[in-house]
Amino acid sequence: MRALLWVAALLVAAPAGAQMPPAARALMQHMSKGTRAAKVGDWATYRFDGGGLRVFYWRTAVVGEEKDKSGRDAVWVELEAGTHPAMKSPLMQMRMLVAREGDEIRYDAISRLFIGGPFDRPQEYSKEALEHVLKEEKDAQAQAQQARAADAKAPAPAGITPVIRSGKEQRLMTLAGTVTAVPVEVVFKGTVIKRIWVSREIPLMNLVKMEIPGIAHSMEVVEYGIDAKPRMVMPPPDAPKVRLEYADSVLPDLGAAADAEAAQKDSEDTP
Image (cartoon, rainbow, N blue to C red; front, side, top):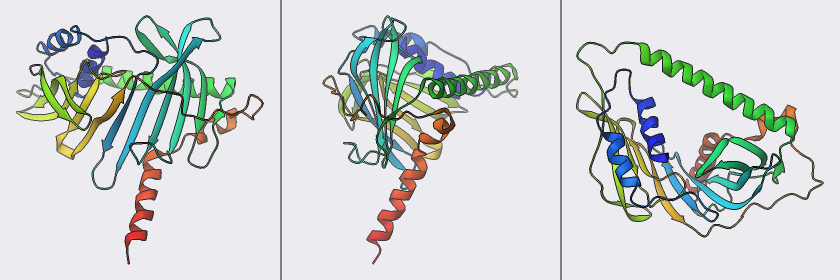
C-alpha cells in the first residue's frame, strides 16, 4: 500500500497526460519480498536540502500504542524537526495519538495532539482546537484534490507526453548506509523532473531518497531503526491546553526558524 502511495505522489507531481508504464508493478514486486507493518519502536530521520543554508532534519517515530477515545487501536507517533540530525535543541516537537487500521497508520484519524517549540513547553491541543486544525487540513486536501482533477482533465500539448518509469531493484548507498531500493522517475522530454527511491528496508514510509534535480532539492534518509523511545517531555495532566484562538499560531514556521538560525550563525562567524 505504501509503495502505491509513493507512485501516487509521483503522479500528482507529473504534468497532465503523463503515461504510466509498469512502474507500480516493479515497485510492488520489490515491496512484496519482505515489507512489514509499522511497529512500536520504528523510527527514521531524514535530511532535507533546499539549497544554500536551507538544510534541516525531520524524525518520525512510533513510541507507544493504546486504544483511542473511540475504542480503536492507535499508536503514539512523535515528530521532531531541527537543524541537527540528533535533534539537539529541536525547532519543533509533536506527539499525536493516531488510529491504525490493519497495517496502516491513519493520519487522518488523530484523537490527541501535543505540540512543543524551541522556547515553549509541550502543550496538548484542546478538543475544539484539534478539530479546527483537522478540518482546515481536510479542506486544504480537498482543494488540492479538486485542482489535481482539473489539471488531469486538461489535455497535454501535442507531442509532449511526460512518462513515469521505474528502474530495477538495486543496492543504493545512502547517508544511512546501503539499502536495496527501486527508483521511480517522472521524465519530461528526456529530462528527469523528480526521482523517488523506495525500499522495503526503511521503516514507516519506506522512503529512501527523493530528488528534484532541476532545483537541486533533495530529501534522504540519514538514520533509521526499531528501538525508538518516547522523547517528548509530556506536560502534567492539569497543564493549560492550546485553545481554539491559538490553534493556527502554535505550529512554528520551520523554514523561517531555520533561516534565522543560519543567519545568526553567519553573524557569529563573521569577524
